[in-house]
Image (cartoon, rainbow, N blue to C red; front, side, top):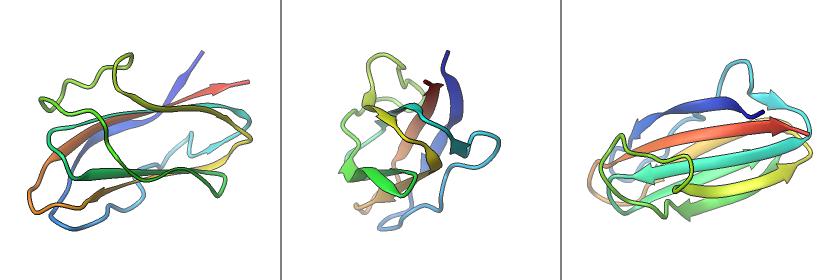
Length: 111
């Protein structure tokens, strides 16, 4: 059964990168499947997901766009990957001039 590592909404200020958006009980994980789900309200939002020092998503565009608050756990999967574990880090970068939002969920399923 998967657990929610982190979920939330980030509003990106023009041309800035967020601080690490993961903290709490599940910041450090063992071997298992990590799933990143995200949906932006506009283009120019990039995501970076690092697990155990390995960059799984490296400043890649958030592929899905739509109304804020409508992220779908089945339709907006950016990455689903089995990893050896370690610290999970997640960053969002706004490469544009507007202030769009990104809804995100990171799930972890131990194996």
